[in-house]
Amino acid sequence: MNIKRMLCCALLLLSVSVAMADKPASSAPAKRDATTFTEADVNEITSIAVLQRMVAGYKSLGDLQRLSWTLARLSKLNPDAGDLRMALALTYAEMGDKSKTYDLLLKMKDQGYGADLSEDPRFEKVTGTEAWSYVVQNLQANLKPFGEGSVAFELPKGDTLFESIAWDPKRKKFLVGSVRDGKIYLADMQGNLSEFISPADGSGLWSVYAMAADPARDLLYVASTSSLYFKAFREEDFNKTGIFKFKLSTGKLLDKYLLPSNLGTRAFSSITVGKGGQVFAADGLNNQIFTIEGDKLKLIVANPKLTSLRGMAVSDDGNMLYFADYTLGLFGADLKSGTGFAVEHDPSSLVLGGIEGLYWYDGNLIAIENGMSPQRVIRLTLSADGKSITKMMPIDVANPAFEVPTYGTMVGNDLYYIANSQKGLYGQYGSVTDESKLEPVRIFKSNMRFAWGEGGITAGAMQPARMATPEEAAEMIRTKPSMLDDVEAAAKEKKQD
Image (cartoon, rainbow, N blue to C red; front, side):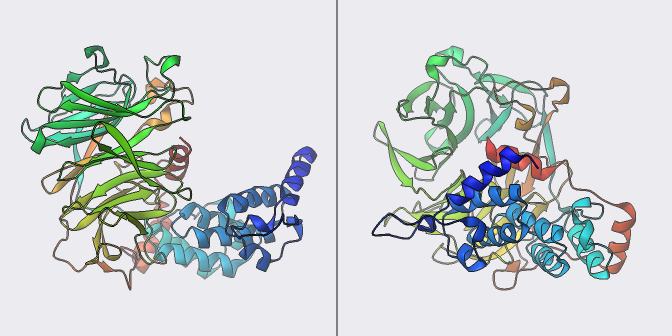
């Protein structure tokens, strides 16, 4: 082991203070040596940041026992984060603890997680038993494709990085936004593109990250940021982000609402508009949500405990705003009372972390989970007060077309969305790393009323969409299926972006 790294890590651990567990203290607390922590000590800590530092430290020191306690604590505080649970399972396996490894992986199976662990060398110490074969078979079963959705059409491949899509019902055409050139194109059902709005028109658009159409008012709202991905990026525009308001039918710029650029790095990454015309935009870097009030942006949601805001949806009556935190799950804001809440669900059987796109449909929420393995689109039925989930229905799961699906748009009863986001092909400075790997952009269509008349999976007794029969398990072991295109690595890279 690298001695310098060990020493640095030990210093990091030695500096951990129990007072950082979010508890009030009347005086400066005495710092404690985290290398002597008991499991009870770890379980008193509520600070995610402190626990994450401890994980890094224990890993480097090779202290598997305390690493397992810390990961278990983090998992309890973040029950919708599958990557933490898998890290904990790997730690148990490295410790050679078969009982805890099997138990945790079976719980993940019940949550709907899928994985191919049949030849994963990291679990070598816990293999070779009938119980391990059972675990492997059922995690593989959850990777089986499910649903009736399909690719509707493809957009031409190229260095465009399409990240957003909207629908114009009058022209019967889609609008797709480019992060790379800041243009908005019209697209027909065959994927043919025609340029609609361009920065050269005088709008001043930068990278287009999200769009929301308001056909009733003939409006198009665009969330745009001056990012390094933008080909025409200028240093003087760094940190600029805003909402651009266009006439939907003509593309004429009507107004723009910019955040002050002197407040640090900003980036509007998602946007939605309710039936009443109220607009909401999320700054995914600072985890804040704004609305347009008059000619200004008004901050309405700001919670320092949020980690990475993604999709948003507004109830039909305009009273509820729902939003996804990529790590922590689903939250809501009662716009009438001005209060926020976590959407209640049973995390032992329903995972709501890893949600990218979120949509309101007929009293339900439709979620695109690209941080889940397998990646999936699900329908969530809400309680009468809109603050908890009563049942879940998988709509499309583990489709071979899914390679980090992101955002979409509703067209009648169908959800059209980008199925293969290719942001992972771009480096930290915004340029494509290997242009030969670019693919046509697949626009997938899922019917949001799929299995509408069925009872769904109730919140009180949720089970995975399927469990392997003995025959299926034998076939899976014979064919050795694998996970789709390194889903976890792609999700992690997107989370870091």
